[in-house]
Image (tube, rainbow, N blue to C red):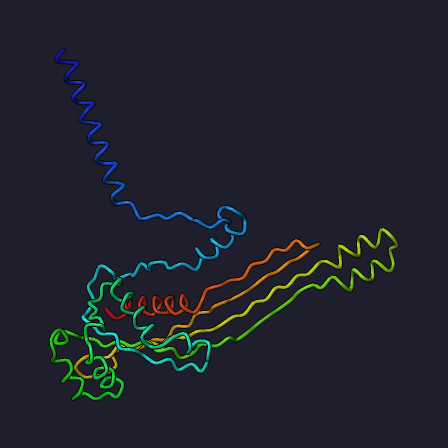
Length: 272
């Protein structure tokens, strides 16, 4: 009887432990979400999702992440590109937001611009002009006293450097087959005449410079330049009214974030 109770109690304890571990695993599991799209699971959905996965945000494994970086402030940089598409979409604050996120991920002590209020304009002006007296004055306020670096990220280039298109228009071939081939040729001509294909690709080059300045002297401590290539493309095929097409590529948002990640990797690796 005692043996039976012992085994029964042991089984109950194991069951309870299993429930606790299962609940714990569920509590710590990363959130997952369903796909309510009516095309979910189809080939078009699979291709679109594969393209989106390739462009999705990915964390960077910064090499010196375990080492705490100095306290810093990110000031809005400059967008020096004349490309209207880029300048309408991006301003210095967008880029600085990405920079604060990535520098924090790389274990730098980042004093967020939102906590600076009106001081941000004074700081930006002082460091852009290299005004040592103004810089020292602003850095004596509150948390700014511990700041070692002032960092800015500038877009120097954003231009589409190439575009390439090719395609097939089957109407001329279809007309020729119909003329030469009689009844059978008419059928072949109709098929050939319905063939329409179009491929187009455009490539951008986007370049970013980062500058690190001494918070007390405005002296430039380091700088670097990073450039990445962005391709946007589309493909379209139609035969006998059945069409297949795709359009996509990495967007400007993603390109700016990747440039910031590349620049922060450089800062983390070389300047900590």
